[in-house]
Picture 1 (cartoon, rainbow, N blue to C red):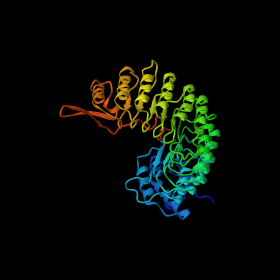
Picture 2: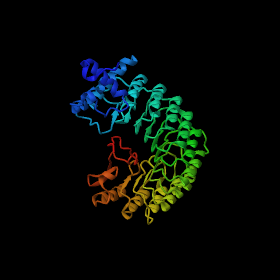
Picture 3: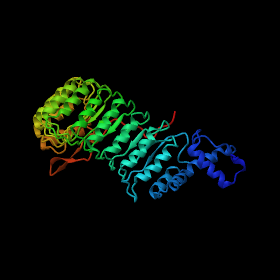
Picture 4: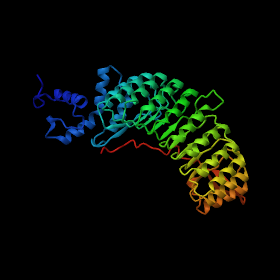
Length: 444
């Protein structure tokens, strides 16, 4: 016989509240009928006891309570800090200064149970922990449920291997809520990368995917490029630092073809790809025809003056490309001159450029400074790590003092010693990304 809440003891009533919070089809935001005369108190109780519910699940599943998680939940859900009409992100990164106990797979199991029953949690940051394939499976199970509300999931630098990546990829084939997924730093290799490419062929929701430092190889990189021929949702992709064995740069062919037809990608990170001038020429063919890309990251490659020339031809024709990161290449003076001429072209859309550490000397740097003077759309330029002789110091000092180049939009700052002008390094650089998923949404 069902218990009547109005006739139960306080202990029984507390147990029923726990049951309703997680399993009542009305959801946690609906006040319990037994509290009809004190709705405000009921709302506050939900906030106060979320950590207690976490503890209850640990007891039920016979899992040790993670004191760090408990402390963070207490702070997140303390009275008055979370409104029931708002959504929020749980931040549980393992690289926090005071964290003593990193998350394991069993901790993720408990959290996934909580996520399945609280639609207010739309963001989860569990980066830099000890999560492996088992933990990835628990999160994949939660993502497959129709009740999943997660929009942001950060799993970077855990211990997820190919099986875990496959679990997550399969769950995202049917998931319609997740907008951003970061798996950077998980060494799941080619098989995991191929699983992600297959997911992108059918997923129509995901907007950001970070797969840098994942030990992707030739097959998975090519597959990711091919998948974006059909995908029309993804806006940002990072595949930096794969482990490519072929010297033919076949991946550049796939990405060039993709850029020709893709009209949704805004941001592409291709750092540490081993890109050469030949690959840059291939990539430029697609970039010239592309009408959406705004941010191109080519840092730490092997692009020289010839590759810079191909990129300059892209800039002369592109109406969308706004940010280019060429830091840590070797374009030298001639490559800098090619870029400067392109930036001086009427209609060039470039706004931010980094050519740090490119073996550029006086001629190339002066030509870049002239481009800044003549192209009013170019607002950010970063040049540290090149040969900053006195004429270069003088012209950049003038750009900054005149207000043409704001101090916060470059990585050098002028100073004088014994009447001579020098440039000091300022630790500023290009934005790491332009696409951003708001992790804390108000529910409409």
